Image (tube, helix red, strand yellow):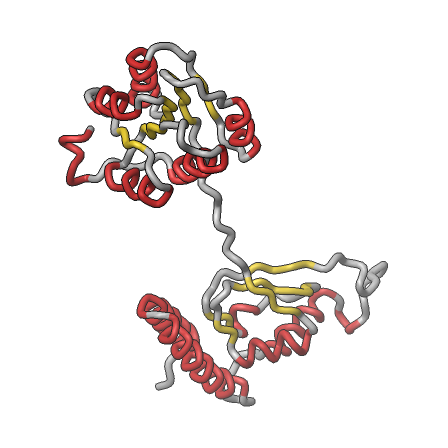
Length: 278
């Protein structure tokens, strides 16, 4: 006994899913195999009398037309082409004639998943009706950027233009009052541990600031070095405070350092060090 089309579809979807996990070449081979198998099955079913009592796609369309208007005449007031063109979105990974059944009236385009298999019989039916095929494109959602707590202490650096540039890149900054180093670190610590905000500190005493900050529970501070080395250190400890000495850095270097740090924030604390660092 030949397997039913619905059974073949279930098998096909499973083959595609497993092959896709194995790699892109495996998925492509599976798609070609499924297309060939479905072609043979559908050709068998399309032969007259292959399944007594079963109507083909053309018969179903004719029957639907007859129900809408007995005798074949158009309904009163109906004008061909008066309905707006529609697009039908299909989610199945294998598109067959059965999947299209009843969904193509007045349709000008179907949209299917990017790696979907459209069987030859289904593709022929779409071509016969003049229906275009579109492939859905997955849109990657941008990661929302957190608000950054910003502190300065023991430095004469004027950060106004830098903050303006960061704001133009949709980086939200909450600057704290410029006071003593210990007080600014305490305030940044509150923003980090209580408010859950990553923080940046500009100071000429970066080494001192690093020691003071890391004495507080829940604060994981790193000192900025080169761009690549800084981001590596930030990820290694899940840093939530970036300490930067602006004296020897250009405006563009500072903007790149802060922008790179913010782009990946917040950074999770590594599980193996959580007991010691958090």
